[in-house]
Length: 462
Image (tube, rainbow, N blue to C red):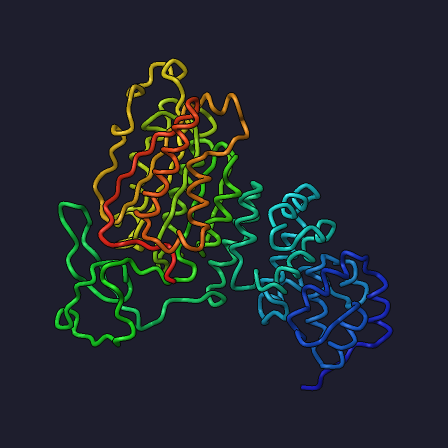
């Protein structure tokens, strides 16, 4: 088929019709088409595409459609929006769905959103990007290999943090509709199921690979498959090699510790999802949605961190509903029955609860509790660290961080300490909190640790 090139005069007139933002958008949309060629301006871009026979009428109409310049469609190409949409439905598209998504998101951001994104990304990009557009920020992140069509978690988490859940949902929808863009499990991975786990009923040896953190006393005759020696894991410790290690869900209803926690668990190579200032319904919804994430399938671990006011058995979230969300329910979202992809894998829960006085809680039951009344059912592979502190600390110093969480983050960020088993790290944490309590009589932290781990747990494989 003979290619019909566009007249140079048409390309020049078209370029003259575009404003600065539209030109930036066009350059961004087309940056994948000729990745090895630098395109300083739109006219050169259009000319090069034309010379390479990539600027057919259909492709040019797609570009103008994505810019929402329907007037130029009619003026230069004699077509309209409906006709272009029909063509896009029938023919393969020139522009990547990822770049189209980013441009659509760009249109939905206001200046306040951009300021918030700039703040969240300053550790990655510094402060020079403050005045840049969203597409320019994305381009800088791409250059640093922090975002791509296959890796959108960083920007998705930023949208969730600034309460632009609508934009995060667009990214999630893109992931679901474009599975070919994302890595999948090896087809040789063994499929298996594990029994319901509890301390009273230790797991039976089941398999080798899909859940490396399940039982490891596997006999060759049980599964009738040979396993390369290089893949044999240390049976005395949980496998912690996936990239990312797993999902880390942070729900901070106080707002003083989220930044430090995000930095800590990102440094440990977790996929961090941060939620701020949630009411009880939103907390329950996010726990439910997190348990359904496909990311658990290939992950080796799961972490959940809760920071809220409450009592010894409940958290009140931001709406202060009494009796609140029962902590007993938290682990239920991530048991093998509710979340099969986490079977046999360590599930870590860190809770900072600012305990309100009984008089504030009205007639709520079970408010006169000590830490031991918070009894988490004995399900295997659970690590439960629950810290309580009198809520009066927040009244005196509303912006103060939790010493428990700060000390935990410090230990996990320490290159030497993080190499220790998690239980050994918590011995050191207990010592630090004990020393804090000895010196600070008005700010007393009470720690409760319960676990049903079956192996040693290292948060780094090195």
